[in-house]
Image (cartoon, rainbow, N blue to C red; front, side, top):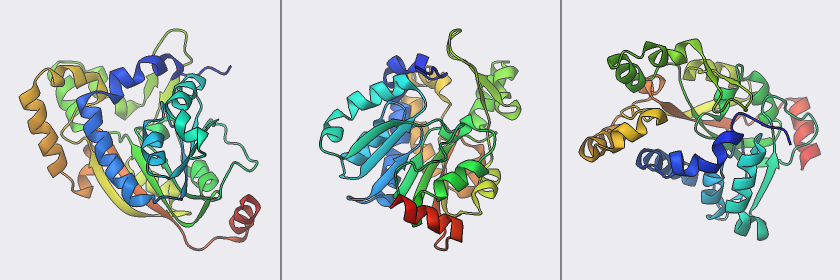
Length: 276
């Protein structure tokens, strides 16, 4: 079984992140957008499904989800969570490593795709995933991406105030992620919205960009803030109010929505025909 850096997190991921008040707030905002993007009966490819929380939301709305992840342990948790949807043909869980994309047919053609909460930050360039994904999407397909930018105001202010400058500035240098001594290390990159869009522009156009967690901390500070419920409630309201697109580059994450170009070149058109 191929181990990844995220295997060590799988067992406690929902308790540590998914079920926290801040993560529920952020995910609820993402779900409102997923509900707007994807309709019952459509087929959606999820990159980096983790424990299957977003896949379960979509499958519960009769959207077929092909949920993929590189981590065997994450896939195991996701398959258990999605079992009732798998049984009725609304979900499928499969291995997919974004750093070693298969060149053969991989499902599709899909009506949309998503990659939430920093999945694309595991890459250091994004042109290849853009071309790979475009070849598996129908023209006009929607894509939703939750990505961490290099500047997070809350992270800079919080850790800077505590004198933790290595942590405060980690996104600017790129971070090395190794949740346990036995897990393989993973380098995390933080593209600005402009940089990511430049890489994806040959195949996609932007239709929406919003900050996601501008007034909220990254997950390593959740506990400190959730012990202060009045402050937390105020920051949640503020986060909902601060939705100007230009603030996206300063947030914990940004939410980017794209549409697959209507026109396909010959090679891409041949791939879509081959897939479906």
